[in-house]
Image 1 (cartoon, helix red, strand yellow):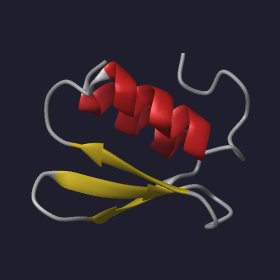
Image 2: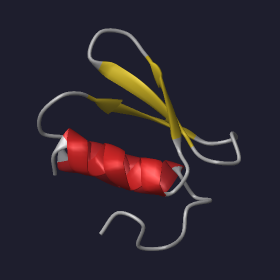
Image 3: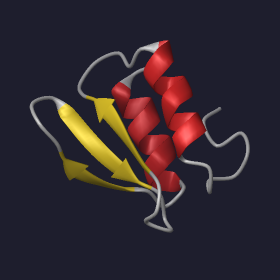
Length: 65
């Protein structure tokens, strides 16, 4: 999955981003209690995709499809 696809899915579901270190961005869910880190730009590894799904629990089921 590309960074652009993942960022678009998170933005559509109300997540907000803040810059992190280097090529990382911190993404916060709409409630503000859950956070995940995603690398940009380019391809996001399958492990990071699974981690984002696991951490952003307040998003609706199937939000990243």
